[in-house]
Length: 83
Image (cartoon, rainbow, N blue to C red; front, top):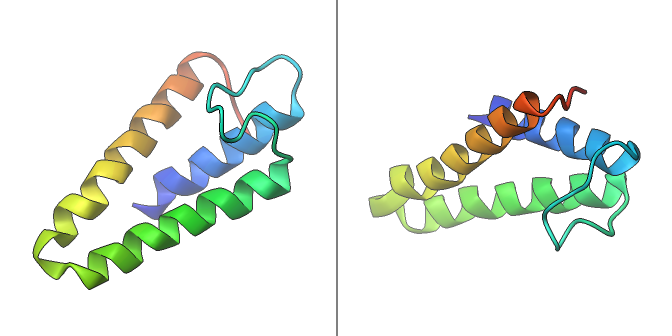
């Protein structure tokens, strides 16, 4: 699970520091790579806290953001983003 999020963070850092790419997330488009890393790690931490707080839906709470991260990583790879 964390592998996709780590790759997503590394790709986002590359996108923000490379003029050949454009960050599509309006929240992160004006962030520095370090700010985006802190934001992404923080939000991932919140997912795990929420999953612990609501154990009945733990799998779903983790699976949805994981699926989104996996899709973003695959999309980034398809347009040539490496890290």
